[in-house]
Image (cartoon, rainbow, N blue to C red):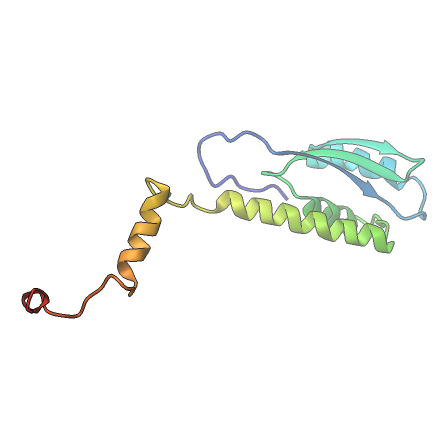
Length: 141
């Protein structure tokens, strides 16, 4: 459930704070899930039984919300399945996946100047400045 760091140099953590919502039944899931997350997964977790939620904080380089919630479901916890919660979850999954993908992407080489890109593109395309007439015939009258 932990991610391997691809880069050897230490990177600053990307801290995420989320709430995992649980179904109404069985009761006391939030407390049990909080205990499991603190002991086994080693992430910050605080149970809130009134909201039936666990507030968690984790480093995105090591965990994603999707991995955490999958681990909870594998252990028999029942997550909230209302439409709004499912949409929120899907959006967070997408954002975190995109952010991790962008972290792994290589840096793109930048042009030395902004005009250089236009100069190179202009010289490679056919436009009005090109004359197909041979140079010796250009001055012929």
